[in-house]
Image 1 (spheres, chains in turn blue, red):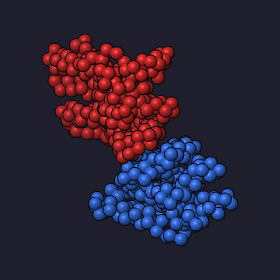
Image 2 (cartoon, helix red, strand yellow):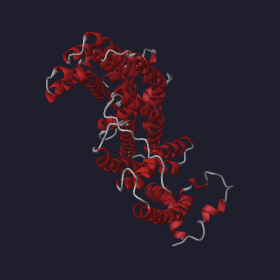
Image 3 (cartoon, rainbow over the protein chains, first blue to last red):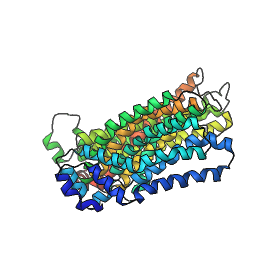
Length: 231
Length: 257
């Protein structure tokens, strides 16, 4: 990445990797505007493809919004480590004193703040465009707030496994999609329950459980995958 | 054809019979060659016998008529599809943790067979579903899980095949297979939960009440055939991988035979 000048000093000073990533994102607006634009573009395909019947759109909204959020998150994550691998920064991270697991967790957290959080914040608009009642928007935001970090963590794992490979982006999507399925199911399930006037607690609790499990496991596995890729 | 003795460098050491004995490519080669040959024969014979009993001897089903006979292919394929994934995860992790290249090769060699059985289970399921339920596909928990399993296989194969370095391919594949195997229960649970949430056309997939003796015999024979085929195909593929990845270790075997 272009931050190669910023890294040695910041790593030496023990400044978090994620401050560097956030600074980079702030200077390159495409990194957070692009996923958002993709999300909007993908969402607008559905009314055009399915027809503008309000009842139908409301019915499919939870699944459609969730699927678009999933794909949009994947889009930015497929190359999470590629820039760092290309300019040698990643090797420095591997041999640095600071644990690689922590570096990975910070990178993914920064990536989520840049590309995941904007989706969460924009989702009420998407919900309104699909005719979801205002009462369900809270559950939609909450489910995405719990779910998109899981997608980011899994996407980071996929990006580490497919680091520097041909067709890396398509490969990451194929690797991560089956693993991300439970999150999609519980996330859209929560919104659907709210839409049907049922309590969404169960699905949201399961999502929180998935988030805890993934947050505990994924950074460690991602670090292992990076070591494998660069060994 | 038959190899009377092991190559000199393999017999010279004669280590105590440890379970890692066949991790040596040279020893594996001699074992796998004869074992694969035997398993191909068993697969062929048991398959022919199973198909004969299943399609000619066994009586027609009381409720489903003749169409139930696809079960003799469908059920063993579905069993093997799940078993192969666990076997991949097992051998891949053994190969990774204990640094046994042969175990990694076994994992990699298992994957195409597993994907084949999964595709076969889905395909025969569709052929069975059309006449009995009137539809090729339902988004039932079991069918959907099997589809996801196919995606897991394809992901594993795609990852391993797109890495040129053998060591990295084996280790990255092991990590993915481990994560996948741990995730299978979560995926299955979420799919079942999803299925109850979206109450669609409810088709009960519970199995038939009881089976005639000949039906069980045919199913048993076909299961043996599938097992033998899985072992034979995997060993044959693992041998090919050995020859591809470290031919120098195997030339001695070839010369001595």
